[in-house]
Length: 429
Ligand code: EPZ
Image (cartoon, rainbow, N blue to C red; front, side, top):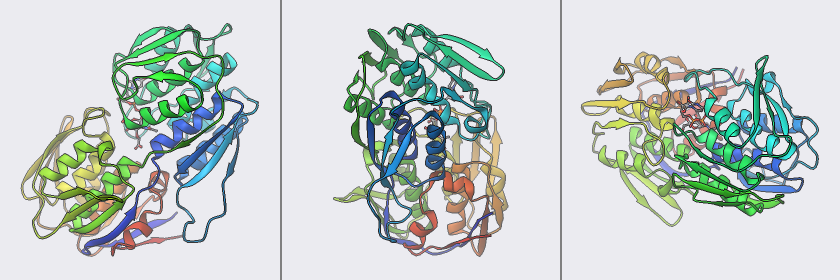
């Protein structure tokens, strides 16, 4: 199993290219199930989760091809991929595949809309919380689907097609918004989704669906209206830049000090996180090529943050912010409201010398003057990268184990950081 070795203490200076967003690419890829024509996606990140979803879609009959030849310098970076679901050969998404990646459960929307039936395994819990699927079930039922649960599978049927309806989400869910939006594109009549997720990835999916011939309006607000159409066609769509990768590297620069251009980053996708970094004393400015992040001399100030659905502070940057606040000048408070068990990084940060105490859904972080390197491991993607951020500033050597978590969501992490002066390398075994 690969590990990452970091020797902390170097400032970051240079340019980091921001990849296509994992959490936008995944639903866009799944949308290819809605049409028998080719969906061409630009800027698809090269990540383990993308490769896994390609396998899962292949099981349903989706062919894919990667465009163009790449030089070795571009190897491992975002690319253009064509997805074609000419024929759906299997409407079952088996447990072995869905349990490996929760987002693959989202195939339920397009499969049901296009084929009138499907069997999709329940995804089960995961390291960050129980993550139920009740909103998907209620929402699809509102669109006139019959849903049964049989032996761990959701069996969904809509023999005469889905029918548009008004559905108000009792709780904001990114995944359930994606699924209902996709399902409603091929339903009869109008669907109105209220209290929908407003995340940029939802907007990117709506753009994709509209490019495929759907009639979706209001994405990015709490109310999305979808006028059903008889069929969708092929399209070319660009995956948005990864706001979580952007925020992660911004926090890395804040941690080490230095001056970095995050190339291709869009500040409007993560304004609340940038505002938080501004309050902590980090300089952030827009440039022609992306965002410039700098911290020279001054230390990091403490902050109080609560995670919220977009446009609030994202849960996917909570662990990284905590990594940064371990060395702030004072006491910070971070409250997690999205997932009930997303503090596994606390114990590992403590191994590096952080002073963090938990009280319910909040973490109190007393900033320390220095961290010291140690072997660490984490149980999810964002928690792992918070350990990288801390390791970049810790004295001596930090070894991050279970690198496969990082490979799920960070394209060429060690290359991007070492190009800016970090002492970081992958140890293959
Ligand atoms: C998406 O997960 C992201 N995943 C997550 O990123 C992200 O943390 C999350 O949204 C919140 O922003 C992808 O986009 C692939 P939710 P999702 O449904 O859609 C509860 C990462 O690290 N809920 O918005 O699964 C749920 O338990 C990942 O990249 C129900 O109660 O999240 C949670 O408490 C991790 N019933 C809350 O809603 C349901 O039926 C929000 O979850 C569905 C969700």
